[in-house]
Image (tube, rainbow, N blue to C red; front, side):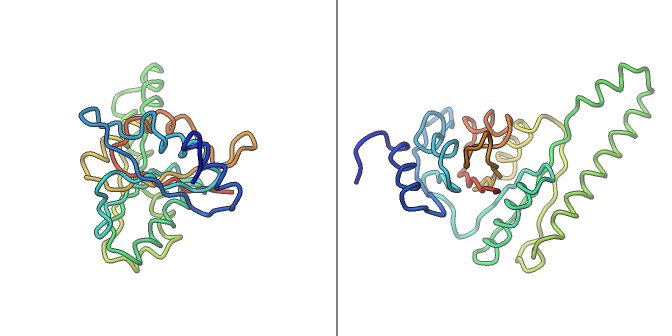
Length: 210
């Protein structure tokens, strides 16, 4: 029992007891579906010094549909490993996603290259991304899972691609990696996560790399 701001007191408790995981429920704010925005859960995801799991009302925990956005970094590999390990305990469908930004194509068009060459270059980047996802997956025990991991390489800005995938794939849980930033553990990595959080409509597990 504590008195004060819920997220501040929770962070204090984590620091006092050195907890490994903080799990918090949150309300669905209705039509806008921005259930994390402005909530205790959102603040904990941004500031808690240990991994955090913010779960929406009535979570589906017997047959999880999980999404892991990947930029091929160690942080996203950790998020994938967490999903695979969890999938060995409960029935889980895992989707590993990489977003291919379009800015390179736009710059190439300005150089006067033909549409065919630009398209060929873009397809090469997509093929490289798919191979990188396969390489990342190969570092896990994914073959022990009931369902094969599905790989997705999709064009567009990261936060847009992720939000669309959450809706289209009916994702129950989004696992995002974090890394210490400016000497503060538990801070979200990158601008994509910061822009994404207010709009996510599923539960979120924030893993952490050291």
